[in-house]
Length: 303
Image (cartoon, rainbow, N blue to C red; front, side, top):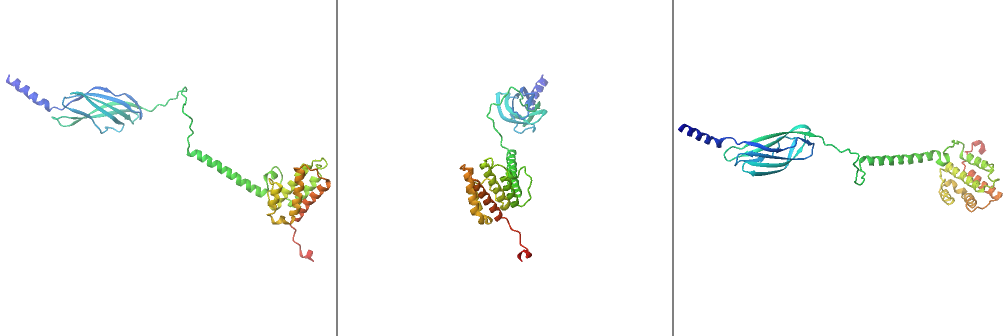
């Protein structure tokens, strides 16, 4: 009998020295989760009364992050944990929870709980019945500004090319669809005057068209001879620009008379006489001959 009492006393003495045990009573951890999508988890653990069990603040693995931890001791031997988990791993991974255990009679210890979780990629909706209800918004990106810069560059290039083409070959409205005439400019102008007189416009009483064609001959000659683009000038503007060209100073009176007479026919519907027509043609021919450079005289011609 004494031996039994001694053995029972020894057992009672050894109980306080045993390691504290922690067991999972309930676990609410999902088996699947979406990548980088937080989910809620909960644990209820049982332990020896008088023991403090806390959730470790140090993550056991980098595949998961625990946030928003809440702890509640529902009874002396039961503690409930609620927390949010953010998964950062794909496919099958292990979610690890570390519990720190402290007691007045034993040394601190840690218990690790593992839960397998399959992490899937985030699935996007492709339902054809879904429709956008937000206001349309065009994103501004560097590609848009690159396109604007490209268009501006093309416009500047076309303007430069058109100006150079004009300088080399004359106004586009005069040159388009025509063969290049390499004769001297005064020869071209005088021949066009003769062709206009023989065109039959005067005989058909097309006086306005006749004078418009006569003005075009003058504009083309001024361009070829002085690089003066008067294709869009009124008579007043043409005369003002002509005063700035030294080569036209000797013929300004003839030019003014010619422009005034022509405007009366084109805009005032004045019916010119044949004598008036011949006088205007003479004005233009005189202007052309006076502004034509004379070839240098040789020694024999001087003698």
